[in-house]
Structure formats: C-alpha cells, structure tokens
Amino acid sequence: MTKKIALGADHAGFLLKDICVKWLTDHHLEVIDFGTFSAESVDYPDYTYKVVDTIKTGQADMGVLICGSGEGMVIGANRFKGIRAALCWNKKSACLTRSHNDANILVMGNA
Image (cartoon, rainbow, N blue to C red; front, side, top):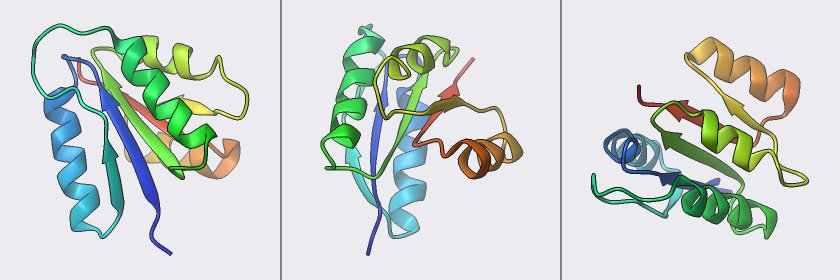
C-alpha cells in the first residue's frame, strides 16, 4: 500500500517543498500538495491546518510542513490531538523522532 504524504509550505518554504514533492514522487509515494506555489507572502497557519486536517481525517498518512524557521508550523500543528509534529534539521533527528516519538509530521525550516 502506497503511503500518502500531505505537504504544505508558506512563501519561505515553497521551493524546498517542490524539491520534496519531486523526491517523494520519484520514490513512489503519493503526494497531496497544498502549496503554496510562489514566493508571494501567505499565512503559514493556513497551510499547517490543511496538512493537519488531511492527516486527522485519514486522507494522508503523514505530512511535511516547511516555513522559514519551522517553529511556527511545529507549534501550530502540535495544537491538535493526534498530531505529533517534529522540527528536524537532519536525517538523524528525523529518524529518531519518527522511531522514538511516532512523529507523523516532519517540519523543516528553510532559513
């Protein structure tokens, strides 16, 4: 069964999000891309909520959120029951939060 990954980013993270979308699809994962799709300023909570809601409703298995620092999105996502978002800076921190904390959303900063 193919995993579904929901992605969302604000204007500071949209380029890195596009790289992630390509990598995930190249590795045969199904992607739900909520945008944003340009450097035009947007409110990061809008994209945080879209990814969170998609996971909570079972439409996606996991999520990826990207903004300037990652802090706003990780705080926003973790407000919701059943969401375990982790701000990660490298492969080791991502693997540890997934295996030890059952993180279901990877948050990255693009600073």
